[in-house]
Each structure stands twice: as structure tokens, then as C-alpha cells.
Amino acid sequence: MPAPPLLILEDIRFTLGNAPLLAGAALQVSPGERLALVGRNGSGKSTLLRIAAGELEPEGGTRFLQPGATLRTLPQEPDLSAHARVWDAVQAGLGPADDPHRARWLLEQLGLTGEEAPARLSGGEARRAALAAALAPQPDILLLDEPTNHIDLPAIEWLEAELAAFRGALVMISHDRRFLERLSRATLWLDRGATRRLEQGFAAFEEWRERLLAEEEREAHKLGRQIAREEHWLRHGVSARRKRNMRRVAELEALRAARRARVKPQGQVKLEAAEAERGGSLVIAAEAVTKSWGGRAVVRGFSTRILKGDRVGIVGRNGAGKTTLLKLLTGALAPDSGSVRLGANLAMASLDQMRATLDPAATLAETLTEGRGDQVWVGGRPRHVIGYMQDFLFAPEQARTPVGRLSGGERGRLMLARALAAPSNLLVLDEPTNDLDLETLDLLEEMLADYAGTVLVVSHDRDFLDRVCTSVVMSEGEGRWQEYAGGYTDMLAQRGAGVTAPPRPPSAPAPAPARPAEAPRAAPARKLGFKERHALETLPAAMERLGQEIAVLRRWLSDPELYARDPKGFAAKSAALAEREAKLAEAEEEWLRLEMLREELEG
Image 1 (tube, one colour):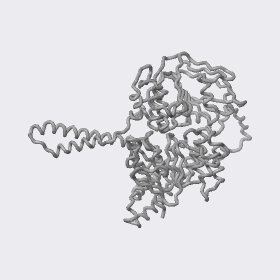
Image 2: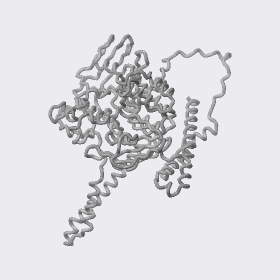
Image 3: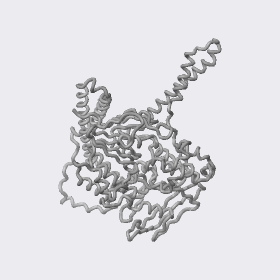
């Protein structure tokens, strides 16, 4: 009989300040679970994960971890400062039965030796070290809070493959849509302090969420109409009869109380960039630009012309020189050779990836007003700081909150608020998607689509690059950079390879065809057999059916009283769940094998 859920959180309550952050939240993690935990910045996702890890005590509710189950966590901001070397930090998490050779192998795969001093690590290197520490013990449950932040595309793709092969349960918080779509099989939505679960991966989440919110809106509309009818009766019916029907008056008050008690969905972020005086159509012209550091060419002979309205993404490994190229193009850094010409009337606003320009001791209001009164200048016009804060989903009472106490996502929103207030016709964004929630990302993408100026963006978020960019500048190695039309997926198609592999040789001459007399007889083309084609067509429906059966069985087994009430039924349903999960995994692997075979044969 398979083991029951490894981790159960029920009716979790937690208050931050005067507002309830979690109000009846629940989380259940079964063996082999692949769960995406989603919700707005500040909704309590990281807090719920810390409670699940046992690092934080809730004010109410229960936490149960199966005896003997191992759990490891990757925090949003890893702190390895207690150790002299990275290897010490990784080794500290290993148990007696864990393999230290695996830990060494993980560090090597992530580009570290283990001898690095944690205090001297960059943000990406600290994240890689923390990943190695979390993955090395191969725990039963792995909790990941923004695992793709500050790491490059090769590391993200390696991590996806490693987690796909991971046998334990995964609970993931991430803003990276593609990462969640590839790895999740269920989704937990944390909204207004409560959780709702979808027994499908993240790819189905947004449509499901919109259906729930639409249904909620209909219920609120019906409640409003009912209140209007009762108020009409109260005004006209009571006076006509000269006698109050106290039951109906009480019902009306109950309806009003129900509407007051309803927690409304949070508002949407209002992103709008203040535009400066329009310049000419040419924004940046770079001719044969070269830059070297320490004898190594970071940029070699790069040329480009960037026009008004272009959205240019810069992509490459960490250390390839993306930030150096960005500084060369914006005139912040002089090239060793070549030239960079900037357009007329250029007004630039920038966002740095490390949020380094934020003073942790300053309050939120002081950061936006630069310490001058209570007005923010947006597009040359004054706005009260509280109103501008609310556009970015900050509550009025947060005005005096020190920046150091904000979550990573809230600091990201604050940086956006400050950058977008400055009049500009050129936006320079260095890793703008780090720590942002998915709704804010959607609105940032819409704002960039409506922005009349030009955008330069460094990002490792493949979905964001696809949605925003008109061209992508890719590092080809040894200081060479190449520009490709379209987004990240278009770059892959043109280049013939991703960031992890060298590009296809450009226009290599085709070998001369052999003479007909010497040409060997071609072997017959391999095609999918009848059974393979039939399996490819029928497996998706079978996988969907298995998924539905698994969801039903999990709902049965989530009843905490089932075992005491019906031990045999509990055992039978547990065995059925294990059988169907094994069949689903087998079907998914077979469908993936056949689909890859089909693409190979048809390609």
C-alpha cells in the first residue's frame, strides 16, 4: 500500500502587520507531486512555503510531515554567509546516507568548484550554490522559491532536465511560465489568503482562474441585485404597511454584511510609462564596436542600427558580456574601437537587475519622491505618492514601510514604479522579470507593447522575450554577437541551436553531388508504423482520462477520516492511485518518445 500524503497543511492562518496574510490556506503534497504554487506578489506564497518547510510557525492551523520524510528548500534569497566555502554549505545539508560525489557532480554541472567564498558570489552564483545544496540530498520533498532568478538560460534548461528526472515531490514558485508549464502537473492558487487547487499543470491555470473570477463576479452581481430589491421593499413596502417586517430587515442587514465580508480581488497594476519629447527615428547606431576586459574580447566588431519603436532583447550565458554590450549601446561605456552614435533628444530610463539603487533604510514613499514632500512627478505632472503607489498594488499603509522589509516581488514593482515615472523615449531593462508575479508580468508586457519609445532588455525569460521583442541579439561566443529577427523562439529557428550549443555553421557550402553511376541506392525512408501512429493518436485521450481518475482518487484520499472509517477502502483507493499514476507516467514517456520520433522522421 502506498504511503499517504507526505506533507499536509490545513487551515493555515498568518497575520502580517494588521492584515491577515493567510486565512485558511491549505497544501497537500503527495509522493512524486509536481505542484506549481502561484499568486500575486505579497499574497503569501513564500510565507506558505516557509511554513511548509517548518521554518515559520503559523498562528493557526496544523502542519503534518510524514515521519522519516526528508524535505529541502531553496529560499528566494539564499544566505550562505555562515560557511567559509560553497562546499561547506552544500556538505552541511547532506545526511549520513547521502552521496557526496553527487554533490560534487552538481557543483561541477552548475559551474562551481566548491572552493568559492559565499561572500564573493554574484546573485547567479549564489543561486547555483543553493540549488546544489537543495538537490544533493535527493529529498522526498523539494520546495523551490523562484529557482530561475538570476541564472542564465543554459542553467535554466539544465535545471528543467534535472527536475524532470527528480523522483521526489516538487513544489515550485516561479514567474517563468515556460518553466512551470514544462514541470507542473497540478496548480495551487493562493488568492486573498485562501488556496484553490487545479489538478492540471500551469498551462491550464490562467483560463481556469478567469472562469473562477467570472463566476465570482456573477455571484457578486446577483448579490448586489438582491440587495437592491430588498432596499426597494424597505423604502416603499414598510411605509405603505405602517408596520416593519423585522425578518426582512434583518435579512437585508445580513446581505449587506455578506457583501462587506467579501474579500474583493486585488486591483490590477496600472503600468504606464511617462514619455519624453519625441526624438528622431534613429535611436542607436553602432559600427564595428569592440570591447575587451583583461585581454579577453567581450564584444568583437558588433554593428547594429536600432530605430524608434524597436524592442531588442540581449541573450547569452552569464559572463558573456550582456551588461557590457548594454552599456556600450547606451553610451555608458566607451568602446575600445568602433563607434556608437545616439539619436537626438534621447531620454533614457533604466531598471537594474540587482535593485542596487534601492536604499533599504528609506521608506517606500521616500524612494518614489526622492525625499521631497509627498508628490511624485510622472510625465512632468505631479501626483500624490499614495495614489501612485496604489497603481502598483501598494497599500496606503505601506508608505512608511522600509524598502528592506519589502518582498523581492514588491521591490521589483517599486523599481518599475520609479523607472516608469521618469520621462523617457528609451527604456533599458536589465532582468526586469525577476521576482515579478505573473499578473504584473502580463501588464508590463502590455505597457511595453503600447510604449511609443524604444526598449532594450536583458532577460533569461523565454516567454517574455517571445511576447515582447522584435529582435534578439545573441552571444555566439568569443565576443561575437549576432542579431536575429523576432523573439527567442524565432532566434532558435534561425540559429538552429539554443544558448547551450554552438550555432549551425552559416551557409556552409554543400558538397558536390555524386555522379549518378556512383550513387548508392537510397534506403527506404523510415515511417511510423500503424501501431505507433495509433498510439500517438490515442495516448492524449488516455492521459487525460487517467488524470481525471487520479484527481477523483486524490479527492477521496484527502478526507482525513477515510482511513478510520473505511481502512479497506483507503487501501484500495491508495493502490488504485499508485497504479494510475504509474500508468500516466508510462503513457507520458511513450507519447514523448513517439512524438520526438515523428518530428525526427518528418524533419
